[in-house]
Structures are given as structure tokens and as C-alpha cells.
Length: 417
Ligand SMILES: [Zn+2]
Image 1 (cartoon, rainbow, N blue to C red):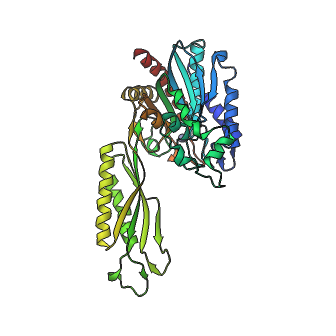
Image 2 (cartoon, rainbow, N blue to C red):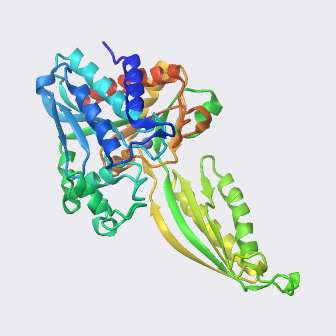
Image 3 (cartoon, rainbow, N blue to C red):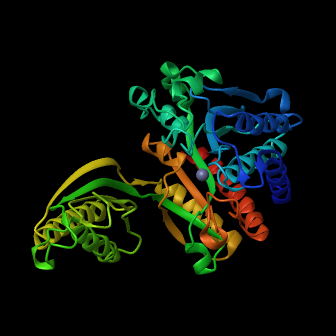
């Protein structure tokens, strides 16, 4: 018997009722409400088929693992995250974990608690990074890409350090790298997630296979001109740093527009002295560029730099760039993408494949070379990280059924390896 989509929806509603307030979900990592979500999740493990064999533990980075041992230790891992942003939605992350549990349950039922391969579920710790500004905490510790020294002293709004918040829930930041021992024997990783964007709704499609996560180039750009009096400085004599930045803010639309799925965003613009009676002498802005192709990403970065220099010159300013952060595009596994495409097509009757703009825990897993793929389900209005985040129940049902199918296809694929 396959996974029961109605059970998934009932569980999600139960979790939402337990961990939300009038403003939305409040499962912020390492807080009591997040712990309540995990305690609730633990109660759901009781009574699973093969329950006495099911093992449940938390790793050194706080990731939660459930293991249904199979005849072979080679394992299929299904996962996502129970943590949410403050005032978040009911589906982001939770859909993937709750569906993973239902799929694991169905596999246990079908195989009398003894599948041919080990099936594991992971609830990654602090995917969102909402409290300390460091996303993918648990999965990056697992992948060995976490920078403990840089992150130890990050603080939340109340001045609590990440190190102290972790200690309060029994995690020693110096030891989070030991989460790498969970990597042993993983043959494949699958994650179901809401799209969090408007593309599937615009296409009128419920589901998508995800090709990978886009690479990101994130820079801070400072234009320097000359502060001057707004009354006494003729227009022709100005060196207006904001004018140069404003031209770039518009030009990035052209730069991104040459590529199908590329995006460029100027998310922050600060002017100095920032008063109504002065020409802007210095303008600091940020640029976030994303695409799945490394070549496209490199080209967009070059073009934005060239454009910024040209605009600076036009406005008799200078420009300086500094990199805030970058990550390479992370393509998912071609064969698992194909299995995901087949599952989507069989259940939804139509197929589309998309890159993911947001990063996900799956990217950290894929970076290690573990065969990985994600499936997206449509987000209504494309809204996420908000209490109005929603997905039609019909689409949730299709997602659970298609993901269950993908898990079973992947088990057969592991067998064929
Ligand atoms: Zn998420």
C-alpha cells in the first residue's frame, strides 16, 4: 500500500496547530517551539510497522535521524527541515519531513519492517538560519562545509550567541563536524519541498522535478562621488553616486534578461550623507546574482562589473566591489532527475523541470557527491516565509503520491547500481 496523502495533510495541520500563533509558524531553530515540533515528531514514530527495529537519534549538529534498517546497510535518505522562519508558513520544510515519515511508514508496511535497503529520514537542524543568519546549519555540518570559527559568535536579536543557543539544547559547537559520520552508506537523498516561487502556478502545473540549485554571486558595491549642497551645486557639476547606482539597478534587468532562469537583485541601497539637502557622495548597494549555469553566472558577474564602471565614469564617480558570499551552482544527479521527471509525469500527467533559486539542504548533500534530487510542489501566489504560505490540498496529495513513487523508483535504482 502506498503512502497516504491524507495522513500527511492531517499531520501537517496538527503540527501547525501545535507550533503556530496568529502570525504563523514559530518553529525557529533551537527554541522551545522548535523542540515542541520535534517532540511531536517523536510521538509519531511510536507504532510504526517494524517499530522495534526503528532507530532514532540526534547527531552532533542537532540533525534528527530515523533509521529503518534494511537487509543492506546502503541507504535511501529522505529529508527536509522542521524549523521555520519567525511568522512562517505551515509547509516550508515541514511538508518534506512529514511526507518522508509517511513514505518511510509505507515502505516499512510493504516490507514487513525489513526493506532490502536501509531507509532513513533526516530532519536537518536550522535550515532557515533565521535566528543567527547562517542558513543550512545542520546540513553544512554534515557536509563538512560549516565554518565553526566564523559562526561561533554570531548573535541573535537578544545578543545570545550561536554557541550558547546550541549549548542550551545540548549541542557542543566544537563537535558539530562529527555529524559527518552520518554520511556512511548513503546511496541517494531525496527532498520534497514547496516551490516558494510563482513559476508552477503561472504554468498551471502542480509538480516539478528540480535540476539543481542555482549558484550565487553576492557582492557589495560602493560608488564614490562628491557630497555637495543641493541648492548651490548646478546639475552639470555634480558627481552623484546615487545616479550611478540607479543606472546599475536598472541595467541588471537587461543582464539577467538574456538568460531564461537567471535572476539579479539589488536588495539594499544606502546613501551617504543620506539627507534631503545633499547630493549623494557615497552610495553602497548590494547585488545578488543567481543561475544554474556557472558560465552564465560568471558572464553576468562580468557584465555587472563592466556596467558599474561605465556608469561610474558617466557620473564622474568611482566604484569598488567586494564579495560578500558566493556558492557554485549545484546540479542534481542526472539519473535521479530522470526518475523524478518520470514520477512527476506519471502522477501529474505533465512535466516541467526547474532550477531552484533558493538554496536547500539538498544542495549540501549533493555537493558531497551523494546522488540527490528534489521535487517541488506549487506554492499558491508564490508566497513563502509568511503565514499566508499555502498549497492546494489536491496538489499536496499529488506531491505525496509522486514523491512516494520517486522513493520506490530510487530503491530499485540503488539495487541496480
Ligand atoms: Zn525550506
